[in-house]
Image 1 (cartoon, rainbow, N blue to C red):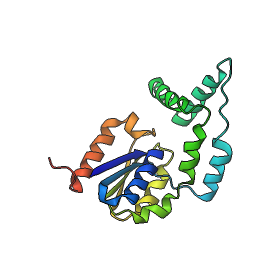
Image 2: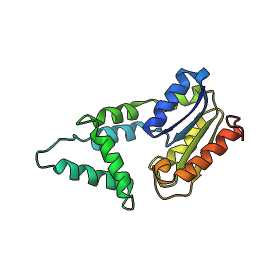
Image 3: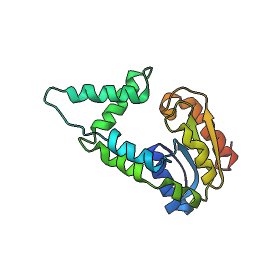
Length: 178
């Protein structure tokens, strides 16, 4: 048995695993629940998932860097943008497959089926912060915490706060014994 944690798309994957194999999941921590409205999904599919074309002169790398800077915010450490860019580039020109699957994942139908303690943990600056309260309302045995931080990517940008809240939650629900 495990405690699962996932951020954004990873959170959707963790939610699906917890629903599909409840006997294997002791607790769940989701940072940024993907609870999009139909309009938000359509907007993201039409406007966010633009083609990624590799160019001979390397301008696709500048395009990617600038896109990640806009998405992560102007004060994002370059090392973090580099990490995200490296992960993005591993998908080649098909980065959109994972995003499309995440946008189309029916989170709101799966959350009520969860039967493990669940923490929805997010920072104020996360683009999915506004989804946290709704996720808690839809999910049995859940709680929500919003960290006072202007940035998203909580586990990467504020690992101490992420670890502190995660460990405290796991202890509260009996998954840790200190």
